[in-house]
Length: 208
Image (tube, rainbow, N blue to C red; front, side, top):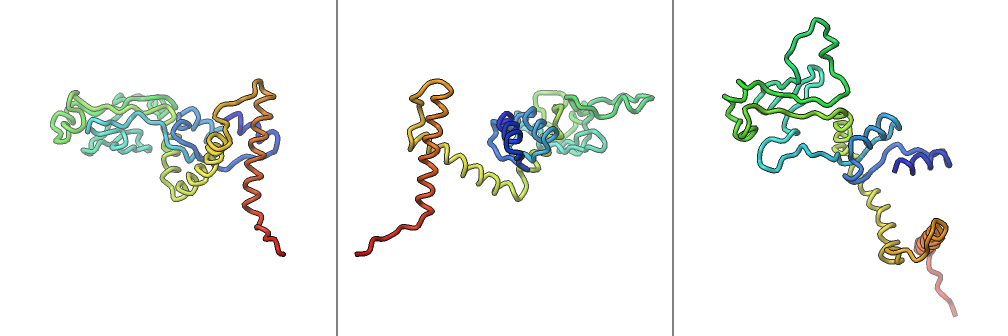
């Protein structure tokens, strides 16, 4: 995808304002490249392993407080990555790196939500990725009102590739080498475009 975007901008001077894709493109490195380097809005589901399936609270159940660099648990208690006090406040300032945010043991011990939060641990911790702010931005994009329209356009494009594979028989290439592959794809795309043009042209009925 990155090569495609760079090549398109280099050859034609075209750069998209937004991109829609599936979860396979939702890795943190890819989202960082799109948002920070290329300034492209990512309508891409985030590849996230923080959701639990055992019935306990997932990371999304904890509220992030960016101003105070902390998480707030479902029980209303704060979770910090460190509780040390430095004479230089800059040493404890938020930085671009992964961190673990932990609750106090005393807060978890007497909490009525412990059985649903950390039944097998003394206290709960939440891991925050290095570029979690970018991942949060991608989540906001996918939760926006424009996302359904973006995904509908994505599926419309993907249908063309499905048609090439299933209808025009490109599930397996017959020619070998870069030139052969390019010729085969060019012929298939030409046939696909002619088929679309035939649908746009009104039918002419013969008169006798």
